[in-house]
Length: 344
Image (cartoon, rainbow, N blue to C red; front, side):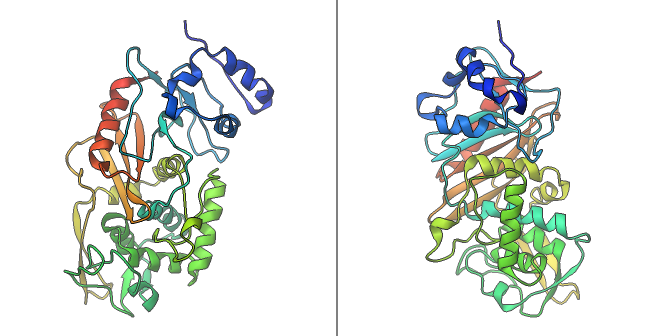
């Protein structure tokens, strides 16, 4: 018989007494994935929903998740998931905040271009008209790594942005999310930050605190680490999953991430730029909602993706950090999640 516990912040002193009687609570992670006492303490203030021996419901203090009537419940007979290639991996139910899978979810690591999800959130929250015009400056042009016209550093096959070029916020947002263009991210950061990258970075970290992320610190809008300060730029798989869930409040972000390719233009029509999506799973499964890639030598190959079940009523996000097999592992994570859980 399943035991159910309802928690509120008022009854936090009784939390651990209740957990002690919740048979199998700590066993729902494999031994190497078990939440440490520190992690349990960290999460305990966020437990507002129903717990069983196969799940825990986590809600942010910033109302990141919607409290719904549907909660994913682990089916009998399904074993825990192992993603051995990833240094960290998490699966999160978007609408309830339930963790379906957790491995090293609070390990602080560089996250590279997964940062651009936070940048996109700030753009759509602070720019009322995405057709507003941005003037490209030298700071944006000389941003390293992937840029518009250059699918990887030092390899340019298309028209690059020009100093003084005028282009819409929408077009830069598309280039940043689809093509992971660092110059587009820098231009957007400066525009939203009132001409200052430092101001935009401050906004990023304030937003992180606002939505209850305590294990993230952003250094740049693109996700490039600052030379000599690499260790100061970090997040976690758990925080990135929460950012991904939060970003689903904005349909435009996930619509853009599903475009396979596109030509964007300067506002005067003088320059045309071909951009392509870095998502290798695009179009492979109609239930995939989109995703964002990330790579730097320090961060390794990372990935955030969203998916829905067959009913289209339940959405999850999956994150892997530093995983050379990220594409196959994300597919495995989605298959496992929807086979192992049912929403009740």
